[in-house]
Length: 453
Image (cartoon, rainbow, N blue to C red; front, side):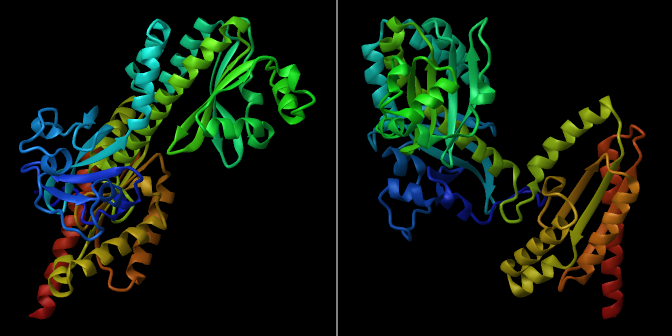
């Protein structure tokens, strides 16, 4: 493994995941790590050693690798699949991505349990086979890779079929509801602006029903005026004469509400049945999207220091270069390399070396944003500054160098380069800063040798 490649040493971050996760060696299928949620799924004790066991044996009860497994294919691309696990008798959404872990080429795999949603989905789909629009709407939701766009298309398809005036998705958080997605028919007006920061308590009658994964059906809002005045006032303000609402439940928490507004009375019952089914699909898609985002963050963040990693560095250089090709702007690059890290690792242990690395990352983060800082190697950090005035760049450089010099036990070699926006390639500017850092590094060790002599 190249010393410049990212290598996770500590997987404790993944113990905070609510979904099961494990890390498996890409070369031999051996389990390297299982998080706490995964141990609960496997009925394993917190200290039970699973190292050396094969993932297909532990997770599938199989004697050989699974044919659909991402490890069967020579690719580092993320993997996303739903399947039924006979070993656990559960349905899972599996999302994984290639990483490196403690020197191993590995994959981080997340298991999202969708058993309840799958069971209910199957039961309701069987009952609603004649409802072609349901299948079409679900296809829209899954065919579009961008979740926000998929939800917009789904609301439009459903709203047109049901002849509704509006379809909404309300996000529920901290006792407030806010509209995140809205469709309205031609000739109607958007009501999204009025559907922000609405108090959930005004729909107190809804909350318990939705948490039991039942729909709320309001055939005529005017009938609520005396019995539920707060709900009536809110619905009137939002120009809702009738509606059907279904919950988006994620881990038994009400994360959102799907609402179909002002539709023909004859469509109310059909809409109620459709919406309950679709809300399961929406919740499953949201959980998968959250898992995908967590994996992406893990793939592009350095777990130990919290700054961006080498994967992000390579990705961002390409996007920055495209931007600079269209519109050149000033570019500043700084290279930092810890001096003496090997000696610290050899004499005091790698934990002491890790503390130095984290101390350097914290020092740099005082003067530059974390998205500008990349840990590109074990002891190497690069800062990329776009469109920053040269005086500001030089002032921050001087301040961070002075600060690092004041931090106990920290010694670094620094190289930097500045381009006023001449159109020079970003790679060339980076190479100049790298070369200057390397020269300072050589001078540092030459001076050390001389002092010992």
